[in-house]
Length: 330
Ligand SMILES: NC(=O)c1ccc[n+]([C@@H]2O[C@H](COP(=O)([O-])OP(=O)(O)OC[C@H]3O[C@@H](n4cnc5c(N)ncnc54)[C@H](OP(=O)(O)O)[C@@H]3O)[C@@H](O)[C@H]2O)c1
Image (cartoon, rainbow, N blue to C red; front, side, top):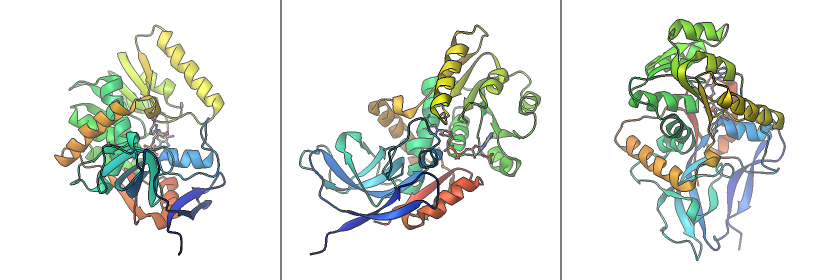
């Protein structure tokens, strides 16, 4: 009898995207509290690329299966996996492992997803919209009528910040390349080109300063972002540092700007620091917004798992607006 198998993307060398292979793995029964989840849709994110290329202070050891966040369907349950049934729709924030036909995961790490949602539209909610929602509502605590500058406004997290920021009644400005200005404007923000003197361009658009800056770029917008704030404003930094030295420098900057009495505030954010129960509560809120039609995540492109290299090439080309989604075929 032949052993059943499933496909997974596999990164065995830093670099790429051509270094990503499709490997076959054994489709075994789940054990203990494990759940075998059939991947329906997975986002492809900047962090998937950074982990593969080697642009982070802490990297997944090689070889690893990329894939940060998924929507899936319970396919089989381990003997001790409680509270779920085969066929249930679920979501998970994995960091690695999602770009595969199947994922094995502890039942406690899963969050239920309403069955009526399109998995492709729901996939960006698990990382990009979670970051945006928590940065806006848990870290910044935005209020209607306030103003915000979004760095990287056309990206996966940036478009989520614009969509959720508009829902919250913010007046928004988005840094983006000119070819993406129409998309940024369509999401309710005033687009600003960051090529050239970016601070001057921000001040021309928002002379009184902004209440919030949301920065996902490494730390190149730290100083500019602080200067763009009005007194009392808050810079929320969620960009991952690119090296151990970058991490040390980022922590030092966060500390310095926290104690420096300049009337402005900085706060760091990372999804890995958020407890699962809080993430699950915010996913549930986001699923409701999607079900009600209050949000419509911008999908840049959908690729089947078999075209994972082309999907990564597309993201790295830099012409993406919104989130690229990998569709399950298992
Ligand atoms: N802390 C966390 O938990 C967390 C979670 C998710 C993501 N992140 C971080 O958030 C960042 C954004 O992620 P993403 O998935 O949204 O990335 P993305 O989809 O690749 O978007 C990034 C955007 O930034 C713009 N950009 C590139 N270079 C720029 C520059 N020098 N100045 C201003 N804008 C520039 C690009 O558009 P243009 O064509 O306009 O340049 C691009 O659309 C990443 O650094 C990621 O690591 C952090």
